[in-house]
Image (cartoon, rainbow, N blue to C red; front, side, top):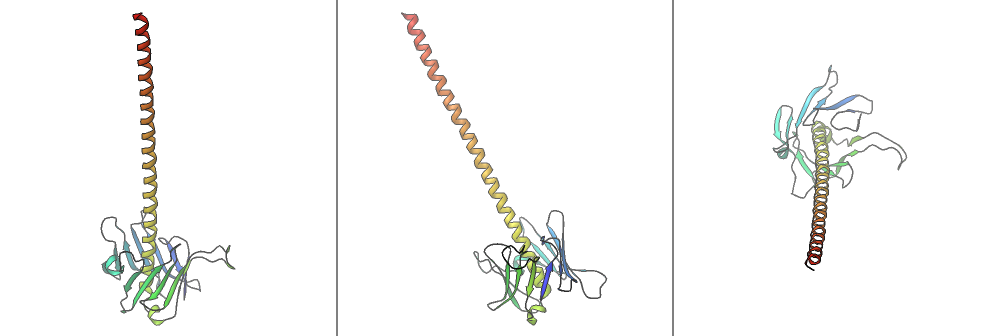
Length: 218
C-alpha cells in the first residue's frame, strides 16, 4: 500500500492513495503548536478528525486519538536515553517501532523485534535515480499493519513534526551561540584597543613630561 503526500510540508498536506483519492490530511495552527490529523472515510461528505497533536516547550506533548487524550511520551516510548527508536502499541495490541535513518527524513516501520513492514520515502527529483516521485509512505499488506493504519499515520506525523522542531531548535541554538561568540570577540577586541591606546598615551605623556621637565631644569 502506498500513500502519497500532496506537499513536502508534513504539517499541512493531504495523503492520497494510488487512485488519487484522499485518505488522510493534516492541518496546523499558524505557529505549529497544534496539528489535526483528518481521515476521509469512504462515502462520507467530508473528513473527520482522527487525532490532535499539541506541542509544548516545557511540558509533555499531548496526543488525542479518537477522543482519548494521552501524553506523547507515554504513548510513544523511547526504549533508552540514547535510542532513536520509538515504540508503541496500537488498540489492536500490536507493537510497532519507527526507526529514523541517520540522515534525511526517512523512517522505517517494524513490528517490534520483527521484520520491516513500512517505510517513508522523501521526494526524488530523479537526479540520482531513474525516476522522480513525490514523498510517500509505503506499507506492507500485513493485516496487522492495515488494521492499525490510523495509528501508524498519527505516530508518523507526530514524529516527523517533532523531528523538524528539534532540528530548528538546534539550528537556532547554534546560531545564537555563534552570535554570542562574535559579540564576545568584538568586545574583547575593543578592550584590547583601549588598553593599547591607554599604554601609548601613558608612554607619550611620561616621555614628554620628562623631556620638558629636564629641559626646563637645565
